[in-house]
Image (cartoon, rainbow, N blue to C red; front, side, top):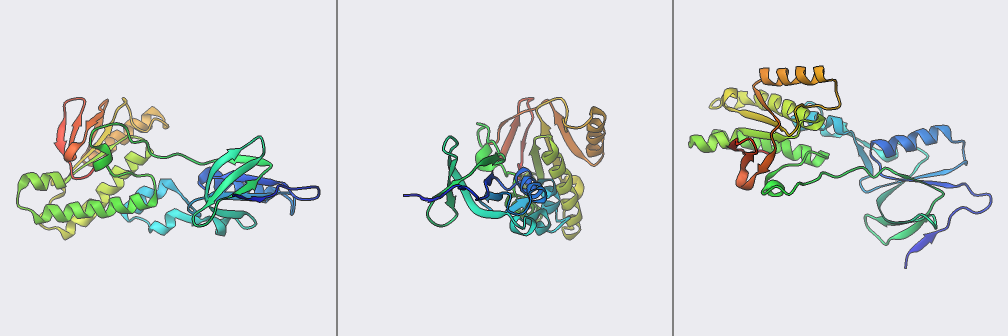
Length: 270
């Protein structure tokens, strides 16, 4: 049976329940606390992690340009006066103004609220492409960014340790699917990191590395002006990064990447 925290009665402050501690949820709570008078309302924020990840910094964290801890901030530290609960909201009964809260450890219980803010964010969508779920590395959170950094460096180690030229080329082939902010920043930062690390691999040359950015539409960075998008493409290509527009990933089984324009390549990183 769920334990119930009763809603406010006469004389008690109403509760504003915020679901999600990402960019939207954290700043909603922060601005509310700045505008509400003392005792005017209770602001409760629920998030499973207890920290906010500034996703635009993930590429820099993956490349080692910044420390990973600089890409996250503690919700409790930046939200004084806000009740921060670590767990998940698993059910909402909006007619009754109640939400079922499941702590990370412990028994679920019910939270009453007067105002509900849903800012739960999004999750990466894995398309039904053969081999994608098994071989691709996500780029949505800090753990994935750190894993990607370690993975790229491991590919350089592999390439420097094998004699078979085909195996070496596979290890030195990096494919990024998606030409939005995350994909463009990831391919640019990781290429720069790999080239900086190249001085420790005298048997490898930056020219041996193959970096490919694949975008299904006719342009990258659709949120920016077209001129900026085209400038970015020219800059990436000057750096030796292949930008494939109008190409979709159709298979990645066994690390063998196949695009719908007929391109096929073995990639150690997707």
